[in-house]
Image 1: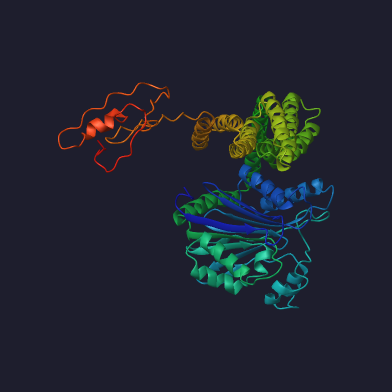
Image 2: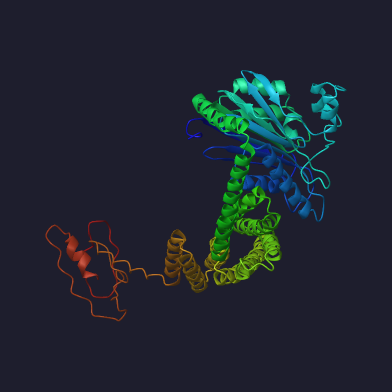
Length: 587
């Protein structure tokens, strides 16, 4: 009901700056009755693990199991996260600054270790600011330097306390602070507050219309400094637009109940006995709850549901602490830790972080030794799955190297091996990944094959052109036909048609169509046929002369007769010269 009757909005920005890796980490959870925001700034240089992420995950998992505003419990959550960093500090000392902000939508409590900060802005002014656990802050508290000088002081990074500290770790937990409608909670790592002054933050709140816009605006202010080196930075803003209003009558009601219980205890001489009886009843109830939660946790563990087992073991451990049963506290602590390792390993496995998953499952194996409630086969199966998945991904990486080196045939062969291994391991995510890589590689190979065939076809086309120029039409036809076949294979239809036209042209050159003979000219009147006019027969043999047709009246011969006789009168085979046109002849 609290969350439904309140309005809290969150927005954030986190970037690596000019560095390769972002070692800041921010996460939050909003439950029905409480919400928790956790911000961490990694202080180490380990490239394989992110200490900030480890701390945030640890604290949020504890909070989800047991939401609380209790200062003691929040301090314990931070101490457990710090212990985890100590356990994992193999290569380098893992350490981080941490800020926790918890609310029940009416009040807030914050816990600090290091130099991650909280600003509470109310009514256009800075109402509260968390205190760093640094040497510069301690000097400011002692009034040796002004408070405003802490942000630029050379000792601001000289931390007196931080998560992962090997000896005494004492985080600071604030008192409960009442929220008001319109309050803004601004969380930031040093990368942000070193470059954006608190006054600029207040101005940005006045200008921004929401948490996401506020975070972006602060980032713009930071980047406007145009520094050559920008550290990792994170800003997370929470707008408490409406806080949950508690019913005052309910508080009075509880106060009356408490008074009714306390007054008889104060007045009656046997009050101590009554208290002892109630304390015994409370312990009996806690003992029963411890056993019930412990049994439920064992049942869930036997079934392989370690997330639920973790929750039950946490409740059982809490009940054992209530009755101060150290034996059961140690027992359930080990079971809770083992379940937590398995849950973390499952999370890492799902996210593809196989080295971390294997490490978590291995730790769980050492925790469940000599415990009959955990099935070792569950862990063996998980470790086997991790190893199989890791082997598949290593094979994929080999294929990626081949692909990057443009050895697509080699990459295809390796991806196929990875696909087979993924199928044998039932690696669903791996199947999807490898399928995409196979498709991409096959597309590359198909593209190269097409380019190779296109070059071959173009060479044949040019060879055909050279053969045509040399009048080697048979060679040209062969070259054009081969090129056409390749173009057809790679589906370049325009070039297929082009080759068809060239083949047709070459065939026409090779086999020309014979031209038809010209028609004979028609005979004209008054003109002799070839071989005539000399008194000879066209055959060249001596033929008897034809009798001369007598001239018509008037002394002129007929033009048609003269043109047809072909020999003069007298029969001597000699033609007489014509005196004039029109067929006149001498009588």
